[in-house]
Length: 588
Image (tube, rainbow, N blue to C red; front, side, top):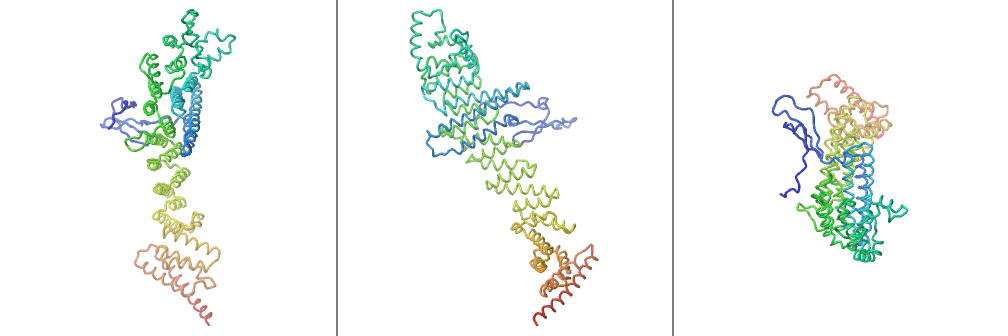
């Protein structure tokens, strides 16, 4: 097993710090801890502590970051693979800038909220987003845009200027003054505002002229000229104007090495950090140094350790992978680095009550393990409402996740049945294609009919269609309702045929035969003969078969049953005689 790079962070739980025994339960993205009664002394605490892995997903402002970046991510996945690299590079740079604009927008909103509330957590989130944008922008310059020697310094100047707002403010103040060269801050700003285009025209002439002036002591009273010459000792003396070592690095490159090559950056970056810092480097310093060394994997690794969620490393790695910069790096457990980080990020989203929907698209674009993760995670989504259940179900159906579809439908069907919502329960069981459960609910419908004399949820039963073939009991329910419709519409002959077929085909449960025979009574007593002689014989046979079984069973309402049997026999005998006469008359 590999050694961990850093010791994991310690989370203090009040009860644990008091030396008490704790119990815990794992959740999808958190742990519930509680004080136990071991040993059995006194009473335990009533508090339950929730330890969350990723607190940021619960921030309303940062949720905008997750939502907006999701759209950018999906758009990146549909860039055609067959396009030449030179055609895709501008698209990748544009996508990178879109990501950064979303980061900046969220950062500005967090800053406003932090100023209004003085909330330390918001200030921490602002500082994290500042660091994220700084790292992302540098990665964009070095890896995605891959600026060559010559234009590289221009991009680095823009990078420093973007993340050093006070340089721009000082520059504007100097340039708007009556005599910029005499302004007190004039020499504080050249390292931050000089552009490469201007510098390429003037630098050689300046350098030669300044060197000559310094040699003959023409301007001995003005030591600032040594800045233009790029004297390192002079630059270090003025490092108070340069708040960070990487600002010092870009200033040094500007005056000393304006045509620096990408492969030379690591040397200057390392030396500048060593010269500038008086203490051990912070994690951000190490990450930036790794970027200047073009060690992409170290950048991703250090960011994964230093940052408090997977958003940054997942999206940056995905973009770098599309740029074909991570092709040589596979993980020892099968998945590549891009997919591993996307799976971790998406798994975190699934713990949130609404962001889980975004995670589905991330899993979809993880070809190796994405579907497996989605199948496991989607079963954990709490189905509080039918609307949410339908949303989850639609996702599963679109991806042919038949096991999950059945599981969701069964859960919802059982919940509806417990709430005595038979129509909803039947609908979910049909959707699950669960014949046994559909049979159970059909029985409930029939019992409900026997008790009340009417059907509930007629719209559902009337529109079962081919779904009624899921089980025999459901077929009977649908056909029995069809019999009632035919009877109500006075289609007596069709109703009689259907009623008889339900009994002779053994579709109807034996316990329901007496109800069916009772339903036949109004048809038997019509003035017009409805049942033919053969049909009447079949009804008589069914009645006798039923009464023989009734005689051997204990019947609570025996008198009522005997009365029904006598009425049926009388009606059947009368109908038989009328049918024989009618059929004999027709034959004659």
